[in-house]
Image (cartoon, helix red, strand yellow):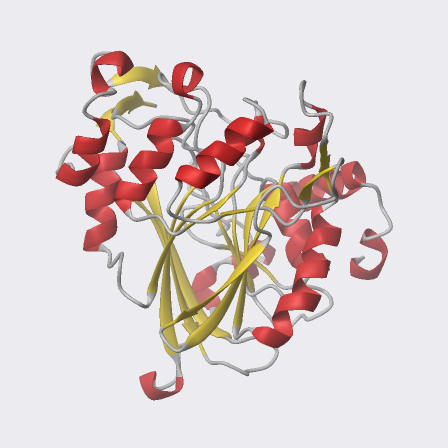
Length: 360
C-alpha cells in the first residue's frame, strides 16, 4: 500500500487513513487508547525497547499543544470546571523544563479564531501570550489564515518564534508564506522541524493568492532536504490525525509527528510502523483542544542509528487544573484583555464524541 498510496488523490488518502483508524480500534476525542484486541497493541508506545546507557543516547522533551482556538483564559470543559488557561500552562511548562537545552516547546496550529478576543484582535493577544510563555515553534493552521494573509504576516512579525509551513505559498510570487523549516542545535542534536498546513485552507474566502501543496508531497521534499543535515526530523503538522497516519507511512524519514487540526485526544503516542521501514516506529502525538491539557513527548535519541535515531519514546497529556498557579509574566501581558474576555471561567465547552474529519 505504501508504494501505491502516493498516486491517490488527497481525499483518497484521507479515506484510507479513516479505514485504517477504524480497523485499529477507531479514533475518538475521548482519552485515546489502542489496547483493545490483539493487533492494536503494536501501536502503543509501551512496546518500545528500553534505552541504552545514557552516555550513548540524548533525551529530548517536546512540550506541545494544538487547536487552542483563542482560549487564553480558564474554561469549563466537558464536565471539568475551571481548566486550562495559558498562564497556568506557562507555569506548567517551566516545571517541565521549558528553557532548558533538551526541551522544545511547540504548538501545532489554530492558535487563534473562535476565542472571546479573536474577532477584535485577530490573534495578537494569543501571540503575545505565547511569547511570554516561552513557545519556540508553531505550525500554521487553517485558522491562522482566516483574517487574511496581511494579518498573518503581522502576527508573524510580532511572534518571538517562527511560524512554519512547508506547503503554503503565494500564487503571485511563488514564495512561501512563512518559513518552511528550522534546524535547531539543541542538547548535542541537529533537530529539523518543518510545518504542514491543512490543504482546505486555500478554499477560504479572500485567499485567492494562496496555494497549499499536497502535504505528503511537501513532506517528501522536506525529508529529502533535511534528513542529510539533521540527526532528528520532526513534522509539526496541522493536517489532522488521519493524514498524520498517511504521512508516517509515506514519509518514513520522519522520526516523530506533533499534530493538530482534528482536535484528537491521544493520551499516549499513537505508533505507526511504516510499510517501507517496518522496523521503525514513528510516534504521533495530539493534545486535544483548547489547552485544557498539556502534551509531553520524551524521545531518547541515538544519532546515526538505523532504521531511525529514536530508541525509545514516552508521551502523555497533563491536565491543566486550578491547582496550577498562573504565571505572573503571562498575566501581565493579558491584564488589559481580561475584562473583554468576560467572567472567568467562561465559554463552557463540550467535548465531541468523535474526531471530526473536517473541523471548523
